[in-house]
Image (cartoon, rainbow, N blue to C red; front, side):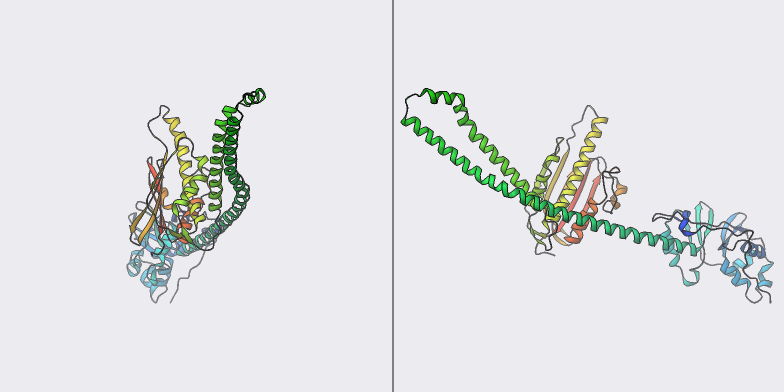
Length: 451
């Protein structure tokens, strides 16, 4: 008995580049891998297939055609298994390859060239055990096929697995760094707020006394005028010089203005102190409206360009959470809305210089809703800006994904918002957007005492 052995010819061995030189990424398709195109007509003898395998030791199989039309394949493994069987040479070697094909015909895995490597690898592994090592048929165009070696597919899949692990590690590190930055920022803000609050409390407290003192002085002046009504040229001259009548009217107004300014400043400091609670270790009962209002106060200077804020506050119970982290979520969502509206307004001024009646607006709505998980507090932050393209909806909460121009967005904001809402508070963060109309983020949070 004679046996046909797999041999290789140095003259015609196809060189396959090392895996590290392949242009492999998480989005790579089968077209990024080496594909083989060795076609044999069914009428050709099996020995010609043997020659093809001998000339190219990397060839995983041959494509069989009938008058140029795709019929099936014969893999290297199948071919030599059949030929090396007892009487295999006599039965198949000098006969048309169609004879051997009929004996070895098996189910084929045919996939489009556009299929992702990770998906194709999964389909390949799901085949029955006897087919796991069979080549994959890749349709690169209608009725145009090539072969992919399963070993190379698995190596590529392994490479993608490595890239995925590196990306996950990078994302984890980035989140840790960002979280540490926010915690450090929170501590710094808390310290600054504390340093400002002490002298501010002093000013605020003394303003109350100052108003009282001024009223007392006015009463004293009034008594003097009643008791000593005789005119005094020196006093009259001084009154005229300092505009005493105007001073009597304006000083109370000035002091009240100072009191109002100090009050606003105290609110801002309290807001900063509230926002600084980024390193809270335990959840506490949190007033959502207070968190929102403190955040709006911090962003007060950003609400320019006639951006209107509409508040539709419902009656909300307390939620169990971390007030500082929730404030960060509101801050990120509001900043994104402000950025989108500002850019959209500038773009509309260029393309619609005559104007139309569009008014930039941010709407904040809070209410209690019933979900499949029970009652939840819902906080909706919506803007009437350009919206988000549908193809970006699935990626919007991914780390490093951003729709902003290079240098203007890190791709971390929404990812961290999603992490805070879902992981830290057991809630949900949803996106609804219509391109050219609006964008709405809805935050759903559990209510204290509910599941």
